[in-house]
Amino acid sequence: MVNKKLLSYAIILVGVIVIILSFTQIQKAIKLTLPAFLTPNVLMIIGVIVLAVGSFILVKAGSKDKLTDVPIYHGEKVVGYRRINNN
Image 1 (tube, rainbow, N blue to C red):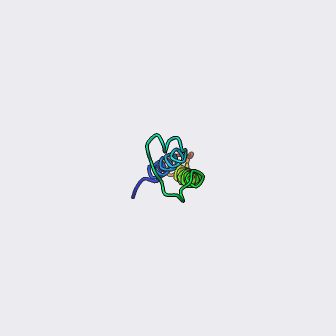
Image 2 (tube, one colour):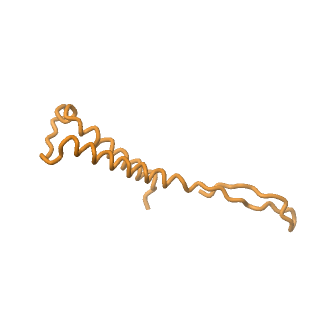
Image 3 (tube, helix red, strand yellow):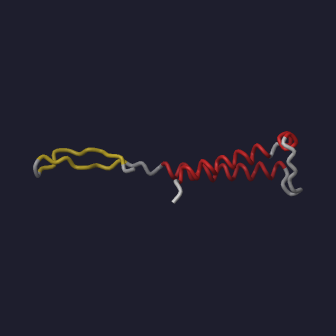
């Protein structure tokens, strides 16, 4: 299984590239011709949506770091608790 954070960074990168390609100056500079239905506004909307999806996945992937309490024993008695990270 692919790491979710790595996948989300790749999706964010694609979104940024699509947003950059929505500028007509960039299209002219790299001599890129796009189909007629892909206007700069449509490309900008697609880029923002892809960027938002990647950001949402990144936030969801990073929210799994939870601390749990582990008992500390002295003999058979629990004398305290220690917090550990569940990664």
